Length: 307
Image (cartoon, rainbow, N blue to C red; front, side, top):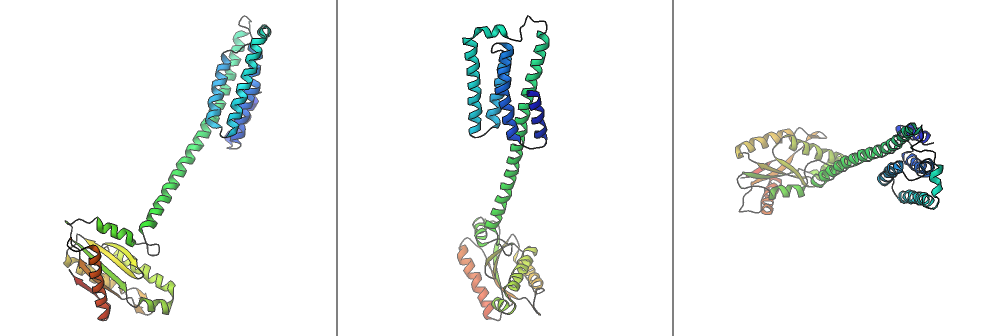
């Protein structure tokens, strides 16, 4: 009986089907069939009982979840209680036992017992191991998925969704981490007549312009780029000499002029200031903003330096 159950369980385990029902079936056969038949054969609670019980208790506790675990454990206790009661109250049962050490076929029968025990323990262990392995694999997959989602959430927390550059929160965090040993500059730029672009060509075209401008700022590797809001972008430049920055900004303006809006090249205005410990970051940004609006007032399409 147990051999047939073991074969059936092995088949379904290999097919990754009915794992839990097969485990429950194996335990029911072990509790309701193997233990009583072993008692009838032995006439007492002998060595096979210890192995059966140990394997069954460990496997049930390890594999089965929910109320069915307690049902199986209570069933095991109940069967053992009945068997113990029979052994105590009816001592003559031992005299009727099938297996006796004095029988000539005792060694052969003992071998069969060992084979059955090995089968039972092997099947139960295999079920437990497979279930644990699948559970472990699910945990690993879940951990990787959770890590991927956390990375994605962290990206969204620090980046602008539309353009992919950093957002203002992350930018100001980087400003706070700056050290006085590194010479730093703050550049603010915005798109000239951006409202006109949206009104004339639509907001989808306006989004395209924002994305291309952000990509140009990033690819130019002038510094850390952030979308400050609307069509305004901030660039934190560190460890670069002002002469080199001027050349890089001139090259940047040429690259941006290659972005076409209808039949016209894209134009930007901006202002740049040197960051120092004597002036707060907020005031430095306000100074750069004043330079930006000075450019707007003077006809746009330029970047003023005050560094």
